[in-house]
Length: 125
Image 1 (cartoon, rainbow, N blue to C red):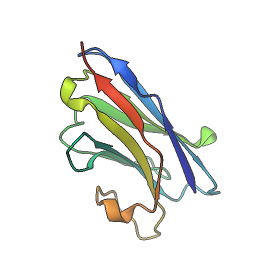
Image 2 (image 1 turned 120 degrees about the vertical axis):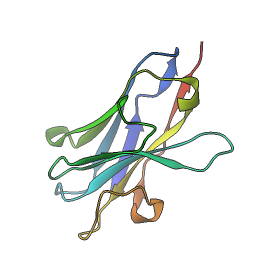
Image 3 (image 1 turned 90 degrees about the horizontal axis):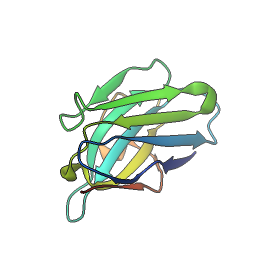
């Protein structure tokens, strides 16, 4: 399984970005995709995740009310719409796949077998 994250960039506070994660090399929709982020000097943290099969979603507090995760199974793509961005949202954003049959929606990094390369999001005026 390969994941390709894109859509990052420089945005002003209060602005929006939409990140995309294209999944290839997996023939079914039986997996979860998580979005994580890592700011300089900080640990990687969970943002949001989705069960690609049934669309169930889960958000951490940093994302609730501002970010929306969605998927387009026809395009094998998961999106993260980020609104009301603030400087503290500046980080490299990663998508990752949990392929386990016994998976649950989780932000435990060790549950995710495949990771994308990350896309930089910078929020600054």
